[in-house]
Image (cartoon, rainbow, N blue to C red):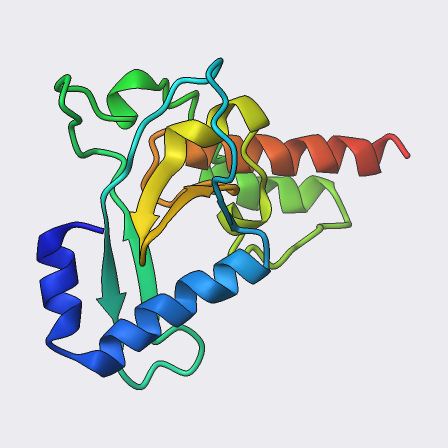
Length: 166
């Protein structure tokens, strides 16, 4: 955690508790994990983070946001080192016209979709961060990461193909 972030949260103990509790919930749910052993074969990158507070919001009064666009000491960010992948979002007009041809449509709830898709093991150390005296790393896709929208939709399409061919 940066000194600036630490000072900001120290001004409001309630916000500091919300931010810490959010990380604790993510740890319990496996969305982030503590780095216990060093793997010398993986590349490392450390992400800065900050908390976004929405007082009175019933489900997420606090979100801890990682910044994949922040440059490191070498002048590179995680987003600069990734490909975004192709845009997999369908054309809205074409999608609407497909309803004329196919009598069945499948819908799904994509809330917290990124946080339900695991990052590959060899990529996890590129998503490290410090928080509350612990070295942690992201275990699931990250909001704001250049490749996340592509990875999420590719995962959805992969599952759709599995169901279609079942």
